[in-house]
Structures are given as C-alpha cells and as structure tokens.
Image (cartoon, helix red, strand yellow):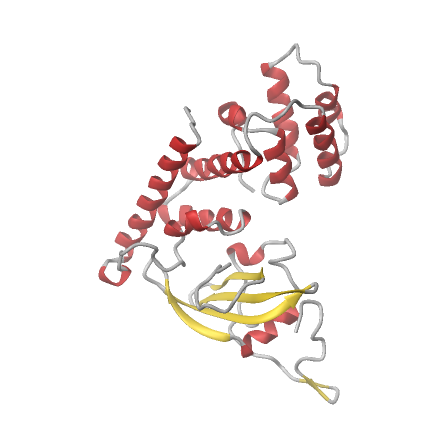
Amino acid sequence: MGGGKGGNFGRTKGRQKHIKNDVVDSPRVGSARKKDPYHSFSDIVDNYASYAERFLIKGADGKTRILYQIRGSLNGIPGIFEWIYDAAIGVTHRRFIPNGKITGKPNSK
Amino acid sequence: MVKIDFDKYEALLSWHSIYWGIEKDILSPESAILYAEKIIELNPEIDAPEIIALLISENAEKDVILSLIKAIISNTPKLKNSEESDIRLLRYILLSELKENAQDSQSLLAEIENIYADFDYPTDMESFIAYMPPSDSYNASEHSEEENIQHLIYNFKSFMSNEKQQLKISI
C-alpha cells in the first residue's frame, strides 16, 4: 500500500463499506495535525490501521496508549506508518517513518 | 507556532536557523522580518542590502521570505557555528520559550511533544516525552500521575541544563 493510493480499499462492487477503527473514528490532536508530507499523508491510509500491528505502550506518564504500526510506502519510499491512539483524547501521533521497521516502540528509526 | 523573544535570543540565532525554522513551518515568515529588525537595531551601520530588501519586502509569503533569506546567507561570511549547532540552538530557544510561558506542567509537556515532532523525533528528547516508554529505570506504575509528570519535568530541566552547558549559552 502507499499514500495517495488505496482508493479501492473498503469498496466492494460499487458499494461503499464503512471502515471503522480507532484511527479513522477519532479526532487528531497535537503532532498528528502537522502538515508536512510525513505527517499529513492521505486520510485513506488511516483505513489500513485496521490491519496494522497493535501494541499497548505505557508512557513515562503512566498512561497506556495503543500504538499501531504497518509497513507501507510513501512516494516510493518504503517504511512504516504509525499512529498512537489515546482513548481519552484521540489520535495523538500520526506519521510515516522512511525505512522504519515494526518494533512496537514509537519513533524507531 | 512558538514566538521568539528576539531581544533575548538574537545572539543565539542565525539566518540559517531562521531559514530552517520557516522552511519547516516551525517559525512564521514574519519572524525573519523581526530578526532583521533586531539585527539592524543592534548594528545600525551594517551594510547589508539583502537584509534591507527583506525588511522592505511587501510580500511576507513563505517562499518569498525564504528566497530573500537565501540571498542573505549567500552574502554572509561563514557561520560562527555549524549548521547542526544552529538548529540545536533554535531548539533550545523554542523549548526555553515554552518553559517560560507554560501555564502548567501538563500543557508544557504537550507543547514539548510538538517540538519533538518538529525536530524529527530526536532520541535525546525521549526522556521527557510523556507517551514514550521511560528511557531510564523509572517505573511509572509505582508512582502517582503527578509524580510521573514531575519526573518528566525534571528530565526536561536536566536536558535544558545540559544543552545550555554543551552549547555554551550564557543567557
């Protein structure tokens, strides 16, 4: 998959399927709203969070959040897409990491 | 975007860091004009037509401002610091501004997360990013929410103190 593609995702024979996951259904806050290409990739990519690996991460603030990571590519560059979902707030982190790997830890390079 | 107090931090800035900050949307294009005003105020005899061109520019759009800064950089003698140090100094300034103007610890930590993202998630900031797992032996589960926040703030202050020392900042 890749940013800007995947327009057929969730559609079957002309009928639109409603994708539901924590990422699609939640507001973006903080750095998840940044406008540069590695943060503001196509919204369609959020649909794929349903297929991402899911990790519970406990931050240094003691709160547990969900980290989603999935392999993909953006503008021909391989890497991972990752999101952090905080049930109390929404999507607090949304980024593409060029050449990133799925590690279960945010921001791994 | 964080506003910089140019009276206080002018000496720590460079045209390179201003360019970098505007290009990354960390600083507003107007910040270049404020920086230029400060330079002219401090050096009224300066012969820098490129800086004057920036000051009198009627177009404050990002691309226009960046091309004017590029002209200044190309006519400026070699930088006193490396590009990497300039960007580190900019990060120090932005974090200092957040620290000085924060309403409370939680909002300070939320703002710091934005700077962490703006500077492409540097590992040396991980110890005071709330959502990152602790990078030391600290066990957040054994402490109250307030204690965890204060631990993050303590790590932030330690980082700032180390940066101040390493970057030889005297203000």
